[in-house]
Length: 490
Ligand SMILES: Nc1ncnc2c1ncn2[C@@H]1O[C@H](COP(=O)(O)OP(=O)(O)OP(=O)(O)O)[C@@H](O)[C@H]1O
Ligand SMILES: [Zn+2]
Image 1: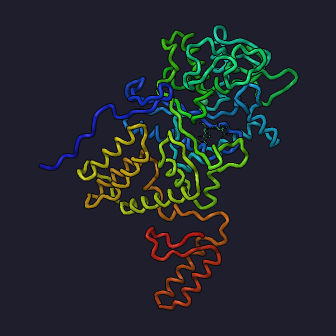
Image 2: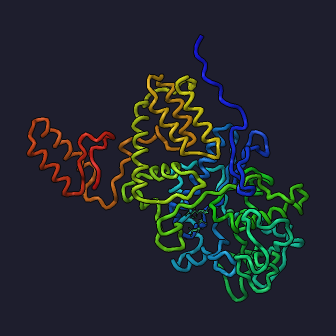
Image 3: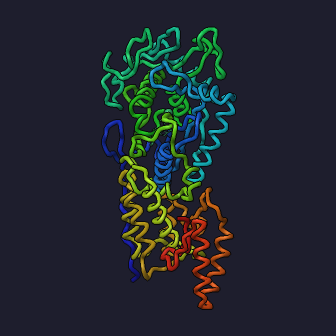
């Protein structure tokens, strides 16, 4: 009788950490067989930094895991092109307006440029396309309609806009575990606010001023508040209640508590029987990418873009690997040494995958691979433990005396979750030439070829001279490099 692989364990196969309860919870979808996920997208007033991109690598792994676990996924990521202010109190300026003025361009051009730049990073990091990119300015009529529904019972008007009264909903701020009594809140009070944590859901254009982006509303000409945008787009596209809402951990403090308050108000007003709920079952937050000097931030001027990593010769998937090596709820410290190490690890995996090139995926149920598949499944199902899942993938790649077709099937299955693109990248495409290099790859290859000839003829003087010629241009020849890279830029 042939050996049967051990049966994969049945449900619950996925537990997720819910920021709302601060607990690990089995994932139970609202609609059987489906998973609906909303991810707060970037404010497109500037390039994203690699810290921002960590938020999307995390959301991508979550989405891929839900697909792997058999759920039909609907993922929405928004693009914030209006309404996000320069500070959390409502006194600040719209980030988009400010940048447009600084660059003397229209907001629409600014938004288009930085949205493209963000999408380029999404593609370079192998982040899957969501079902929908929702653009905030496309939803202004829906935002006005939403605000009209809740205005009577939950809002009040001031000269500067329509404000949400946080005392009108139960348990405001429970996501943040914040103290909300007046005077204790971190939110600066705009003159006339009833509670310090009240926030603008519609900001009126001050009289005599004109904004580049403004719309008519029952509360005067103006623009929607950032928190309102996410409540409206998520509810509109996914329907309350939906399954999972994600964002960076900073959103746990203000943006998401404010979304929750609006969702409660909206659901209550619409007779949806979830007033004490948040409109969403699970709120998930990734921790920060930090530098030794602190949190990476756009507002601080100098910041690391993915393109800078590429210009320095680091393949962007090296950064994805770096993210996967840490748990999404842990802080991750960026360093160039860490990035280089992650890239070498990826290179080793790609070399192992190259041995399976041209092999057709067979039946994944090989008994020797079953323990790795099970370890992988358990790890990824335990709140997305990518660090452990990676080692299971490495073990599968290293397994000896295993049918190649089975191995390929198992590796493909795991890589579909981790998204390293092991069969789409090769050792050579992984090696990028830094922008500052003074020599092209073709020139390097040409010198190396001549050096090989010289060595074959035991002409060591010429061989050494060619090595020195490359060294003078910053290229280090790596004879016998176990990873087979042959050269690197020093
Ligand atoms: N250092 C970081 N590490 C991980 N995620 C981050 C980091 N900084 C911001 N994020 C997340 O990136 C996503 C996009 O944020 P957004 O485009 O609004 O950036 P931002 O808040 O304007 O930028 P910053 O806070 O860096 O000045 C959000 O989910 C946010 O929580
Ligand atoms: Zn949001």
